[in-house]
Image (tube, rainbow over all chains, first blue to last red; front, side, top):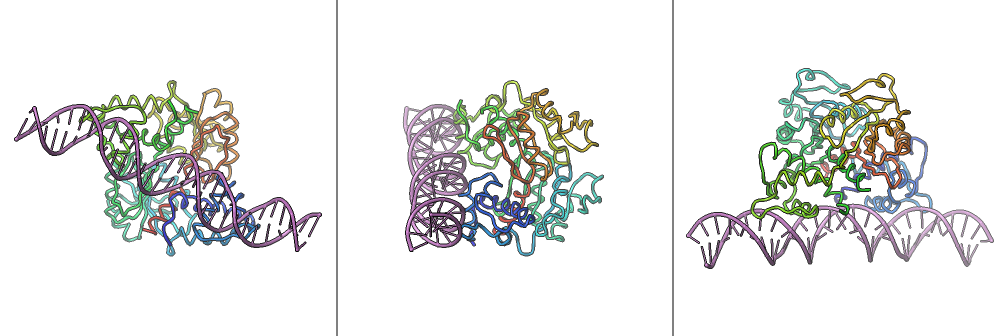
Length: 206
Length: 206
DNA sequence: TGGGACTTGTTAAATGATTAACAGCGCAAA
DNA sequence: TTTGCGCTGTTAATCATTTAACAAGTCCCA
């Protein structure tokens, strides 16, 4: 299957979560406009995304909730699952561990890294915390392919280098500075300062 | 001045931060390609953004760092500054307070809200925590115009309603569910589950 | 003083994403 | 039956964003 557009992938993740809530409520079919309302987007967009993944609903009945959940799973998830680590176990790192731990079977946080001696050796939500200089070793042992970076700005670039050298294939960067990675490593940057300043600009201008 | 494109606004925030680091290092001029490298984008994009804000550099010398910082400030910041609150003071909320507190003079977190009795009445980094049912009152007293939403999924929709009713003009939603706001309220949604699943998809497909 | 390399500013083309438009099927009601 | 409405699937148009292309000004050096 060929690569889907970024925005479609984002929405698929959200469709699935919304659909799982429906499924829990024993809802068996859903119309494009219902799904659209849950995500606050348009029905066309829903139908188009679903077309792109090659699924078909039933006319006048909508989409079969459980079938669609399964299909999205086949597209988004890796068969064997992927292991994830959090680098920098401050408040943000802990928030992420707490939120993800035990949520997804196919995507699990298996290690944390930090350089604060008080944190090393501890477990948070059963996730062990190692010093950063063991990153390469643990990444290999635990077969980790994604790292979430939540370290202070000053050390982000250096830690990012360590992560890339360890063979990680995807990085999610929450540090407030842009990092540099080779082309074959996926990079998602989420800068909270930027999000806030952007909101402030549009509030001011509205 | 007419409204700038969203992506340009995001980058302006990042330019400014990068430029302030340059300024601290006494660097007085910067070329478009240097600024581009700091953000890992192209020089054309930098020049185009700077054109859009009506600034001009000096040929063969680049842009005057401090002038550009000031101009970006005039565009992004409100004259009097804006007040911000954090709703839900779990790990993520605390991470945000800790990070922003004392950073921006024009954008300051002045209140936190939560319904956990153990948290109410406390201060975290000098930011007082109130119960959610006082939100409307405090928002008016403190003239808060932006709310950062970091509550659990189950209560997000309801709390969002409270926030909108209180007259907030911009919401940044980190809760893992899409919320609904009137057209005149700015909404930025940042879903960490989606970010992670998206990374997993592109790692798998690469 | 003339040529070449460098860098900005701007317009035009290309790419990516959303929205509009509508054909087609199926059910329901007359 | 037939008519009409509701919903899906798809193509075409629009809108947003990035990238390419290049003119023009400046500096340096021969």
